Image (cartoon, rainbow, N blue to C red; front, side, top):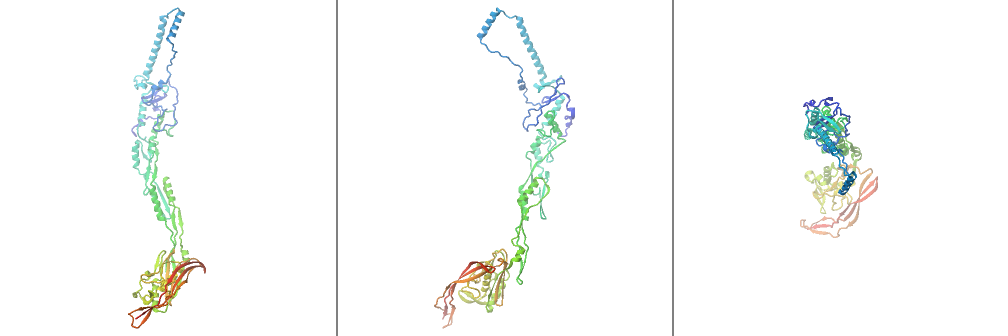
Length: 606
């Protein structure tokens, strides 16, 4: 009914009180005013609080159709009957006989008896007339019928009130306005006008408004020079209507602190308050909840960008000629407090913040290996040198194998393979035929002599405390290393392997010069003043058979013979790894037990 000429039936000021100074009372049948000569001042009892929605107001002055007037009248003590005790018929007769005897059987006069009858009839007639007058006057109250030629009256709360047609018409207009099943005009929710709407209509109207438009929000996460924004684009918001619609509907229908307590009826107070809403609106706000999973996703994205494990300094390059290294810079690890950041964002969103900036707590984890520590600790861990022979082909093969291996870098956890690094030894690669051992015999083989390279590297790797993965001894002890400290190779079945079991790369340098073969291993030092050496001892000697084993070989010239296998003594050797601290032994452990079997002399003849 907004804008429908409410001023026509909502008069301002004293225009509402046409019966002034008479007191006006409202009823469903109309409005009654106490006559001036019967008027007396009364203060309407007004409740401090209205009952909750759905309950009944017991002290409201507004007439309701369900008032039980008959019940209230019945409760009034109109008449009181006087009762006498009941006597028996015999007692009554006796009494009558006594009376006749005392009075001489005198009868009452007829005139006296008729006087009482006339009095009773007169009283009854007067009462009937009074009741009729009252019934006529109370016709509007009892039957809902209004007299048109003279005033109508009613008894309300002990007052005799006169019916005022103008006030009754005005009351009906007010009542029609107040009893509409809509939210009263002037009520807003989140700035949306829901006046003159039903609760369901208001729910639909609010549901079409995005929560981010009603309550704009944005939170910026700042870490270093990087920014992330949390707003309605990546974190949806949901309006939680809750009971806000019921609260909006209850405005003007239940008690509110905005209604001033006056001597007017509660209905009149509510009406004035509701009409005032049209100019003095009320805005209610809804709760907004945020998609917490979306907030978690944003935090996880930030953590994935920021979090990193510490990066150790590494060897960037190694100059094998000058034995110098260059290193990369170490970087600390970074971890953000994801849970703390999540709680900060949620707090700002709950506050409805716009443009708030939050930061995350960072935890720095230093690198295990810094550039300074790497530069100061990266050195030659171990080195070993063996003497070669004067045989030219053998020394050529040793030099070619050293060149193939020199400068090899073995990363942490990586395994070095001698055969893989050098490849097959062929004449195309420059290898020559030289003495070698096979099946217990000395033979000529392309690449012969390179076992000295593998044995020298084995000694250097063992002294660098690297993990030996694969090692095989020769058929008999070699001359260039101690017993139990050799490592033979043969393509492709016998290989020598070791693993870099340190946390940093190691570099292998091998070279031949002046009939000497050397192997150097560079990496993180074993510790200040720490070194390792190998010690071997023979624990058992195995003598070969004394007799010679003669074998007929028709391939030999007739009448000739040759020794193919020399008689050799066998050994069981224990090799120990010994740790030293500044030259003092600190630990000793059995490293290998090597067995060299004994060989019987073999002579072939024809």
